Image (tube, rainbow, N blue to C red):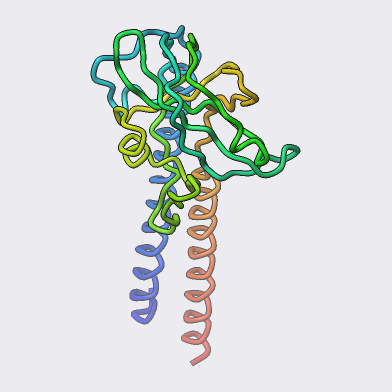
Length: 224
């Protein structure tokens, strides 16, 4: 081997090893994400149970629960739009359970023109799934409290505004008063397979370019 080939060879092998390592990491992430999705789907299909005494945002995410009690009347309206339905709001309502706990219920979708329709307190027995939504980011506008329009389900802020515990359940079934339920679905983004293929392809291309470059060095040395 010509001395001029040693450094490019090392550079090519190290670069390819890094790219293969990144691809392998994405394969591991794929297995992890598939496990997360499987656990979430299994959690959602379980039979509804009473509210846990101390719910955990990780262990109890998507946990099916059943509550009995009454809607108290106060609501927070989250601006949204649904294909085929048009603009409207997610109705987040204050709910008091038969045990005296006050929680948030995402009752579902309400058309825009029904926002101001009176929805008095009413008794209810319903099932749903616990959720800690990630709707709100640093780019989310602050709520318009004067018009009661929110731009994401901010559990902490809504609980403070509606005087409930910071715990939200998304209703699975209709709760009446013109509101259409929007049950929880598993919507994890899982692009790790595509990322893995990309890194492995880059590693293959890197090795190919390295071999080509070494061949050119060798040919120039032989012609000298």
